[in-house]
Length: 109
Image (cartoon, rainbow, N blue to C red; front, side, top):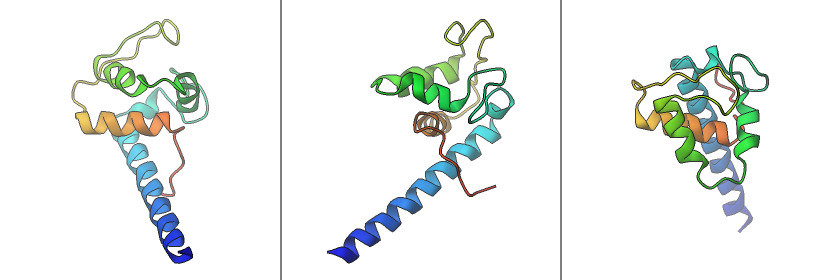
């Protein structure tokens, strides 16, 4: 029983590290880091502030996927978020899930 628990925790840790690495990689590859940082405001809000704002919002994933794809303005101020029509739906999903999880750090550089 304890062995199963340990194996499960190791696998969860591996999945979490992969999840973080994927989110960071997508954010870097699509210039998200040009306007956002994990823990401080740049042009747009920090990823941690976004996670806090949408915490507990069951529709947040879909709302933010649409915002990334189509762009928009008014939620965080006057500066608009540009659209990202060239991003794949999978990449959009992954980066939004990562942001909503609080943009966990990755050991991947």
